[in-house]
Image (cartoon, rainbow, N blue to C red; front, side, top):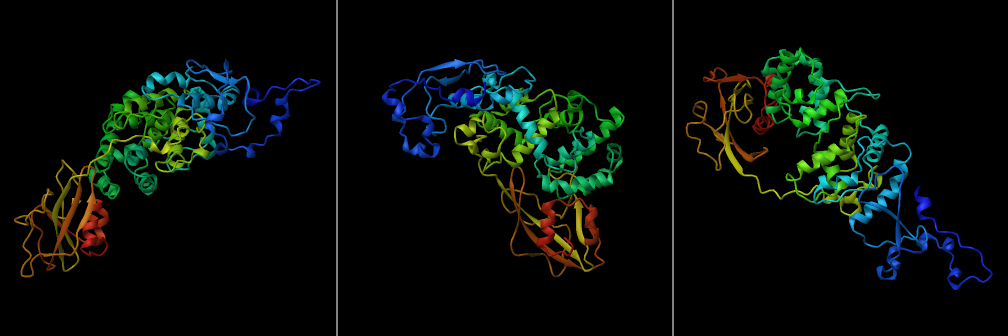
Length: 476
């Protein structure tokens, strides 16, 4: 039974002397003539309702209803119902889609996921209908990305792996050029495994979160050593590889191998939390959101479903200004029904990041070479290239014995301004002290002179490139 059947007014029987109420014919009342502002809630009398069955939907715990005497269709008369009643209305809006062949792949009704959702409500819409609506939208509006397979084909496991590692904490726009460069330089996972780590770190420089580059390299070596250069088509085996966590393992399993896995990134987390109006704040709500996403994932096309949810979050269900009117999941979305979709996901207020400071010693020879060194193998920016500096501490440390060499008669001079950089767990401010030295000045132990034309071969992180730019080093 479709919406028209449920909401159409019953025809009146003709009589010789119609009663007085018949003078107002509902068909003559145009929707534009009555607005919510013109009708006060107190004027809308409650009506008796009786449950009706909706084909194709298991309506356990959420009965669709229709009034015995309904107001004229399109009259725009709305009360302020609770989320549960809005969910019932949403069911009526999409029941037609559920009854026209949309497969309920897991036999679930999303309304039945209320136990998973905990304190959040649940849309009374079959999970198969939600998946079908999302996949239909994805087929029309999918983003064209360099790592994404076209024409319904499965993604290349190496391409999916490489892109997913790069995309962690990094935007699609930033990742695109790096992905293309990596693939051109190391077209197969075996090629990446055979590359020296220093080359991988150098190619990664500027992308940030450098532990990912080391994990990328370690994982490539493990795939070659354990699996003959082929990624395993098993989520548990993928999770056993170094540098691959639950999200990346699920993404590779679903997108590359069509396994019913459920990756949950920031975009999917946002879509699901709004769909169910999950009130618990992050990160406490992460397990619940993961379970809800898994309940929605269909057995057919799980990879496309995951990518569709990612695209929906990236393009329509955005953090600050969700375009609900264009969303294929608008009808069953409880966040939208509550009129405050942008509120979700609820987040715990973050305190200010602790501040650290230091001094970077920028030594420049007369031939333009800059003194650099490699950071330790463990810790922040491990094995990356840096301008020598003091330890980074709560206050600006005294230069003391931290200068890498004597600056001669001219000495070290502090440059105006500071370099600011934000890491995951703290904010850093560096003073830059510069010394200009003769071309014959030797490098101290553990350091090396590097000409600007050779910077491309160095694994210089963003913060160090800022230091070089602040010191007006050509080519920085």
